[in-house]
Length: 178
Ligand SMILES: [Zn+2]
Image (cartoon, rainbow, N blue to C red):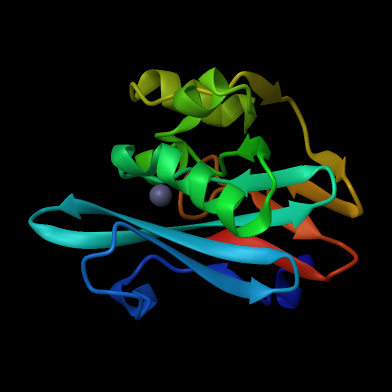
């Protein structure tokens, strides 16, 4: 039912390379309103592959969805957000266990950012030696941050066994990683 309302999908393909410079390590693109997409890169089987995450600016601070997978870009992403929006990242939610979602979790926790995954993601992260979050969600969870309210829920297995979806009810859109 809700899946039919999908308006945003973060698709991991070369089609998502933005035209901000071929070799830029970090790219930020305005999505709509307070929503932004950030892109970082890693090398997989000899190819430079982008991975996208999202953040939303609120009056209470910035909510980051997923983390860069280029380990050199954890701090530059925080710095870029601070510079552009004059706000700090206060929380980070990783949407499945793969490195392009979770790699920065430990770093961000050290910076005082509240990091979250589901218990299932944490189990898979542990098993696969990935970074883990400080706070674990045992069930679908609604977060209220500044004027924004969003629900993090588990739709069943998709891209991975543990992938979660973020639903912004007022804005009527999903963040889905495919
Ligand atoms: Zn993945």
